[in-house]
Length: 215
Image (cartoon, rainbow, N blue to C red; front, side, top):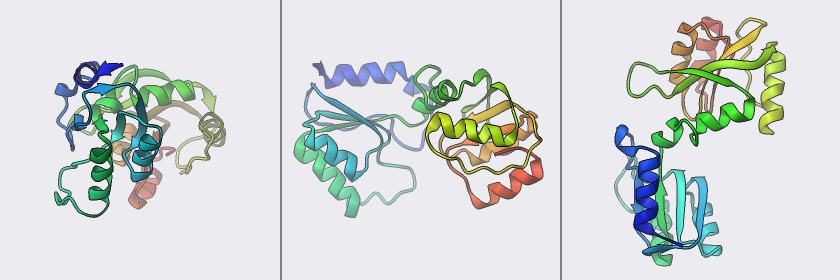
C-alpha cells in the first residue's frame, strides 16, 4: 500500500513531467482515495478500462491517454460524464502520462518498442517543434523490406500496415510510437531505410513513396 500523494510524486519525478509542454495535464487527473492498494494500468482511460478497474476493486488507474485534452469541449457530458462519474463514484484515482511516457529512456513506449524489435537506439530526432520524441538506430540484422514486415509481425503478434517505398536493404530504422506521421520527413532527411509509427494518415502513404522510405 502507498499513499496517493507518494505514488503521484514518484511517477511525476520518474517521468520528469516538468520537462514537457503537453496537450493534456500529466500526473494526477482525477483524485480518488488517499491510499492505493491496487493499481490498474492501460493505454486509454476508456469506459471499458474504468469498468475493469471497478470490477477488480482498484484504487487507481495509470494510463497513457487520460482526459482534458487541449482543444476539446470542456463540457462534462456524454461519455466524459459517464467515465468521470464511474471514477468519482468508486473513489478511483486517475493518473495519466502522455509525452513523458513516450520519451522515457527506460520505461517509455519507444524504449519498449526497441526492446521488442531488437533495435539498437543511437539517437533521437524530431520535427523541429517540441521535444525530440523520435528514435533512430540499427536493425538487429539487415532485412529486406518484406522480411522486416514479417519481423515486426512476429515480435508484436500483429501484421503491420506496410508501405514498401524504400530500398531492398533495411539496416537503419527510425521509430516513434503513437500519432507520429509528421516525423516521416525528418526520418527521410536522416537517410533512414525505414520508419515505424503507431498511426498513419492517408497523405503519409504518398509522402513515404515520394521520400523513398519504407513505412
